[in-house]
Length: 220
Image (cartoon, rainbow, N blue to C red; front, top):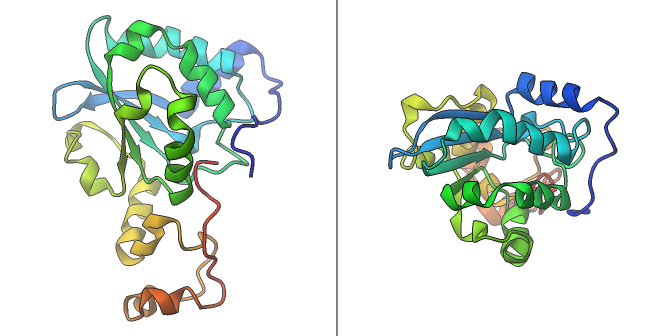
Protein backbone atom coordinates (compact mmCIF):
# COMPACT_ATOMS: atom_id res chain seq x y z
CA UNK A 1 0.00 0.00 0.00
CA UNK A 2 1.42 3.36 -1.06
CA UNK A 3 0.61 6.16 1.38
CA UNK A 4 2.25 8.85 -0.71
CA UNK A 5 0.80 8.39 -4.21
CA UNK A 6 -2.22 10.32 -5.46
CA UNK A 7 -5.29 9.11 -7.37
CA UNK A 8 -5.68 9.57 -11.13
CA UNK A 9 -5.96 13.07 -12.62
CA UNK A 10 -9.58 14.35 -12.64
CA UNK A 11 -11.30 15.31 -15.89
CA UNK A 12 -13.79 17.82 -14.41
CA UNK A 13 -13.24 21.53 -14.82
CA UNK A 14 -12.02 23.52 -11.82
CA UNK A 15 -15.44 25.04 -11.22
CA UNK A 16 -17.13 21.64 -11.49
CA UNK A 17 -14.71 20.21 -8.97
CA UNK A 18 -15.54 22.97 -6.52
CA UNK A 19 -19.24 22.42 -7.11
CA UNK A 20 -18.76 18.72 -6.38
CA UNK A 21 -17.06 19.48 -3.05
CA UNK A 22 -19.96 21.78 -2.17
CA UNK A 23 -22.56 19.20 -3.17
CA UNK A 24 -20.96 16.36 -1.20
CA UNK A 25 -20.58 18.51 1.92
CA UNK A 26 -17.05 17.30 2.60
CA UNK A 27 -16.23 20.43 4.59
CA UNK A 28 -18.73 22.02 6.95
CA UNK A 29 -18.53 24.55 9.73
CA UNK A 30 -20.84 23.26 12.40
CA UNK A 31 -21.28 24.37 15.98
CA UNK A 32 -18.58 24.87 18.59
CA UNK A 33 -16.30 22.83 20.79
CA UNK A 34 -16.36 22.91 24.60
CA UNK A 35 -14.06 25.96 24.51
CA UNK A 36 -16.52 27.91 22.37
CA UNK A 37 -14.42 27.65 19.20
CA UNK A 38 -15.95 27.07 15.75
CA UNK A 39 -15.73 23.49 14.48
CA UNK A 40 -14.75 22.60 10.93
CA UNK A 41 -16.18 19.14 10.25
CA UNK A 42 -14.43 17.09 7.55
CA UNK A 43 -16.06 13.80 6.51
CA UNK A 44 -13.38 11.70 4.83
CA UNK A 45 -15.80 9.22 3.27
CA UNK A 46 -17.39 12.02 1.23
CA UNK A 47 -14.10 13.27 -0.24
CA UNK A 48 -14.05 12.59 -4.04
CA UNK A 49 -10.35 11.81 -4.21
CA UNK A 50 -10.45 10.64 -7.83
CA UNK A 51 -12.36 13.68 -9.05
CA UNK A 52 -10.66 16.75 -7.58
CA UNK A 53 -7.21 18.31 -7.68
CA UNK A 54 -5.19 20.04 -4.99
CA UNK A 55 -5.88 23.33 -6.73
CA UNK A 56 -9.65 22.83 -6.60
CA UNK A 57 -9.59 21.89 -2.91
CA UNK A 58 -7.37 24.84 -1.98
CA UNK A 59 -9.51 27.27 -3.95
CA UNK A 60 -12.71 25.90 -2.41
CA UNK A 61 -11.31 26.21 1.11
CA UNK A 62 -10.02 29.71 0.44
CA UNK A 63 -13.29 30.97 -1.02
CA UNK A 64 -15.97 29.00 0.81
CA UNK A 65 -14.64 27.78 4.15
CA UNK A 66 -11.89 30.00 5.59
CA UNK A 67 -13.92 33.24 5.38
CA UNK A 68 -16.64 31.63 7.52
CA UNK A 69 -14.13 30.85 10.24
CA UNK A 70 -13.53 34.53 10.86
CA UNK A 71 -10.30 36.50 10.57
CA UNK A 72 -9.14 36.19 14.17
CA UNK A 73 -11.20 33.47 15.85
CA UNK A 74 -9.62 30.20 16.95
CA UNK A 75 -11.18 27.00 15.63
CA UNK A 76 -11.00 23.21 15.85
CA UNK A 77 -11.27 20.47 13.23
CA UNK A 78 -13.21 17.23 13.57
CA UNK A 79 -11.94 14.80 10.94
CA UNK A 80 -14.15 11.72 10.48
CA UNK A 81 -12.03 8.83 9.18
CA UNK A 82 -14.84 6.26 9.21
CA UNK A 83 -15.00 4.18 5.99
CA UNK A 84 -12.08 5.95 4.34
CA UNK A 85 -10.13 3.74 1.93
CA UNK A 86 -7.31 4.28 -0.54
CA UNK A 87 -9.27 3.33 -3.63
CA UNK A 88 -12.17 5.76 -3.32
CA UNK A 89 -11.80 8.65 -0.93
CA UNK A 90 -8.23 8.93 0.32
CA UNK A 91 -6.10 11.30 -1.80
CA UNK A 92 -2.69 10.19 -0.57
CA UNK A 93 -0.33 11.72 1.97
CA UNK A 94 1.50 13.84 -0.61
CA UNK A 95 -1.80 15.45 -1.65
CA UNK A 96 -2.81 16.08 1.95
CA UNK A 97 0.52 17.69 2.65
CA UNK A 98 0.22 19.89 -0.44
CA UNK A 99 -3.24 21.03 0.63
CA UNK A 100 -2.08 21.70 4.17
CA UNK A 101 0.99 23.65 3.04
CA UNK A 102 -1.22 25.88 0.88
CA UNK A 103 -3.33 26.95 3.86
CA UNK A 104 -2.45 30.53 4.89
CA UNK A 105 -0.24 30.80 7.97
CA UNK A 106 -2.81 32.98 9.72
CA UNK A 107 -5.37 30.18 9.41
CA UNK A 108 -2.93 27.50 10.61
CA UNK A 109 -2.05 29.59 13.65
CA UNK A 110 -5.71 29.79 14.68
CA UNK A 111 -6.20 26.03 14.45
CA UNK A 112 -6.18 24.74 18.02
CA UNK A 113 -6.98 21.03 17.74
CA UNK A 114 -7.68 18.28 15.20
CA UNK A 115 -9.93 15.52 16.54
CA UNK A 116 -9.28 12.39 14.44
CA UNK A 117 -12.38 10.21 14.83
CA UNK A 118 -12.17 6.44 14.29
CA UNK A 119 -8.44 6.15 13.49
CA UNK A 120 -7.13 2.73 12.61
CA UNK A 121 -3.95 1.19 13.97
CA UNK A 122 -2.03 1.68 10.73
CA UNK A 123 -3.03 5.33 10.55
CA UNK A 124 -1.68 5.99 14.02
CA UNK A 125 1.54 4.09 13.37
CA UNK A 126 2.11 5.92 10.11
CA UNK A 127 1.48 9.36 11.57
CA UNK A 128 3.60 8.57 14.62
CA UNK A 129 6.47 7.78 12.25
CA UNK A 130 6.06 10.46 9.59
CA UNK A 131 3.62 13.02 11.00
CA UNK A 132 6.22 15.47 12.27
CA UNK A 133 8.10 15.32 8.97
CA UNK A 134 5.09 15.68 6.70
CA UNK A 135 3.14 18.40 8.47
CA UNK A 136 4.88 21.59 9.54
CA UNK A 137 3.63 24.34 11.79
CA UNK A 138 2.96 22.09 14.77
CA UNK A 139 -0.06 20.32 13.27
CA UNK A 140 1.02 16.92 14.56
CA UNK A 141 1.03 18.23 18.14
CA UNK A 142 -2.56 19.38 17.71
CA UNK A 143 -3.72 15.92 16.59
CA UNK A 144 -5.96 14.09 19.08
CA UNK A 145 -7.18 10.56 18.34
CA UNK A 146 -10.79 9.84 19.25
CA UNK A 147 -11.78 6.16 19.23
CA UNK A 148 -15.50 6.59 19.93
CA UNK A 149 -18.17 9.23 19.51
CA UNK A 150 -18.78 9.33 23.24
CA UNK A 151 -15.26 10.69 23.70
CA UNK A 152 -15.74 13.25 20.95
CA UNK A 153 -18.67 14.69 22.87
CA UNK A 154 -16.29 15.42 25.74
CA UNK A 155 -14.61 17.92 23.42
CA UNK A 156 -17.39 19.10 21.11
CA UNK A 157 -20.92 20.31 21.82
CA UNK A 158 -23.01 17.33 20.79
CA UNK A 159 -26.22 19.18 19.93
CA UNK A 160 -24.38 21.53 17.55
CA UNK A 161 -22.52 19.09 15.31
CA UNK A 162 -24.32 16.71 12.94
CA UNK A 163 -22.47 13.43 12.46
CA UNK A 164 -23.57 11.23 9.51
CA UNK A 165 -25.62 8.15 10.33
CA UNK A 166 -23.04 5.68 8.98
CA UNK A 167 -20.59 6.97 11.59
CA UNK A 168 -23.06 6.23 14.37
CA UNK A 169 -23.64 2.75 12.93
CA UNK A 170 -19.90 2.02 12.87
CA UNK A 171 -19.52 3.34 16.39
CA UNK A 172 -22.29 1.07 17.64
CA UNK A 173 -20.56 -1.88 16.01
CA UNK A 174 -17.42 -1.06 17.95
CA UNK A 175 -19.37 -1.48 21.16
CA UNK A 176 -19.79 -5.16 20.35
CA UNK A 177 -16.45 -5.65 18.62
CA UNK A 178 -13.94 -3.48 20.49
CA UNK A 179 -10.92 -5.17 18.92
CA UNK A 180 -11.77 -3.24 15.74
CA UNK A 181 -10.56 -0.12 17.58
CA UNK A 182 -7.05 -1.37 17.13
CA UNK A 183 -7.27 -2.48 13.49
CA UNK A 184 -6.90 -6.16 14.37
CA UNK A 185 -10.06 -7.41 12.73
CA UNK A 186 -10.99 -7.58 9.09
CA UNK A 187 -13.69 -5.13 7.96
CA UNK A 188 -14.94 -7.55 5.31
CA UNK A 189 -18.30 -9.38 5.68
CA UNK A 190 -18.59 -11.01 9.07
CA UNK A 191 -18.20 -14.75 9.55
CA UNK A 192 -19.48 -14.86 13.09
CA UNK A 193 -22.04 -13.21 15.33
CA UNK A 194 -21.38 -10.52 17.91
CA UNK A 195 -22.59 -12.86 20.63
CA UNK A 196 -19.86 -15.33 19.70
CA UNK A 197 -17.27 -12.59 20.01
CA UNK A 198 -18.55 -11.55 23.41
CA UNK A 199 -18.07 -15.05 24.79
CA UNK A 200 -14.62 -15.66 23.33
CA UNK A 201 -11.15 -14.48 24.24
CA UNK A 202 -9.05 -12.27 22.01
CA UNK A 203 -6.43 -14.93 21.45
CA UNK A 204 -8.89 -17.54 20.26
CA UNK A 205 -10.65 -15.05 17.99
CA UNK A 206 -7.49 -14.31 16.04
CA UNK A 207 -7.23 -18.02 15.17
CA UNK A 208 -10.67 -18.18 13.54
CA UNK A 209 -10.95 -18.42 9.72
CA UNK A 210 -11.97 -15.24 7.96
CA UNK A 211 -10.27 -12.94 10.46
CA UNK A 212 -7.13 -11.21 9.24
CA UNK A 213 -4.52 -9.93 11.66
CA UNK A 214 -4.57 -6.40 10.35
CA UNK A 215 -7.20 -4.42 8.49
CA UNK A 216 -5.84 -2.54 5.50
CA UNK A 217 -8.63 0.02 5.63
CA UNK A 218 -6.79 2.68 7.54
CA UNK A 219 -5.43 6.03 6.51
CA UNK A 220 -5.13 4.77 2.96
